Amino acid sequence: MFDQAKEHYSAILDEIRGAGLYKHERIITSPQSAEIKVGDATVINFCANNYLGLSSHPQAIEAARAALDDRGFGMSSVRFICGTQDKHKELEAKVSSFLGTDDTILYSSCFDANGGLFETLLGPEDAIISDALNHASIIDGVRLCKAQRHRFANDDMDELEAKLKATQGARLRMIATDGVFSMDGNIARVDAICDLAERYGAMVMVDDSHATGFIGKTGRGTHEHRGCMDRVDVITTTFGKALGGASGGATSGRKEIIDVLRNRSRPYLFSNSLAPPIVAATLAVMDLLTASTELRDRLEANTMRFRDGMTKAGFTIKPGIHPIVPIMLG
Image (tube, rainbow, N blue to C red):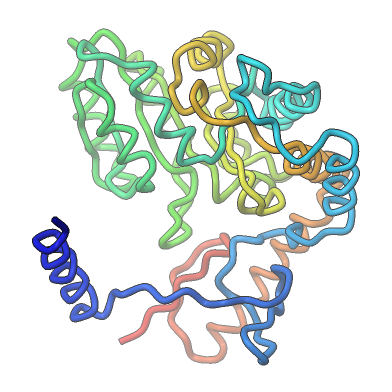
């Protein structure tokens, strides 16, 4: 029964290998850190998203350990049946306070947050206008939605305005963008996007996975960095990068939007709630980041030092301030 399929999939794998794109996992035998063990070797780690070094922070680990003893390993339920502990609501409130939004809903991942956003909020009478370099999770989320789909070239405000003019007949419109584009570290001009959105009556959605916790003067994210904290309607983000690096994600924004998601967003309704140890560790991380900007300040200084050092060493890098530092080869 599988012979024909096996031949088909084998051909796909041969094509991937031939293009040099076959993915091999690096097996790490240590906690995630700036230095990690790969086999018997200790190596410097330049490729994780552990921006603030919180993946193995003692306070996060202790909070997770205490929650494991006090609240258990998992919930074995979706949120709306019997999968909501007080800690889940506490984390949602702390994320909302940190980001300056009305309310927050937790997901198993930011991929799920994006996957459950557009289809829930927008229908055939509506339009999505998405940056061409948005993350795969936004692209897949848009595919699930029946709204009209439009793309604008990366960070091109003229083309975005043209798309807004072309979709003025739609009932609702949402502009979707990454806050930071993960391949090159470019920070979206969310302030300019908000200007256009207000001019043409559209909503703004920002995936801030590569910004929450360290971009902006107090680490609130791209909307803080661009001076438009009260103008973004929907923010999605992850707990799997700067905020401890475990798992989980969130959608934060206008109260009415979050209420609709709680009632109709399928990844929320049909996925188990976040495990108590992850929730507790993330709460500890939020407390650390709310109390002090020391970690994000250190990251900012280290980023500038690394960028300056690479330039002095003769490498060509893309300019910017983000710790994602593309090194141009060839």
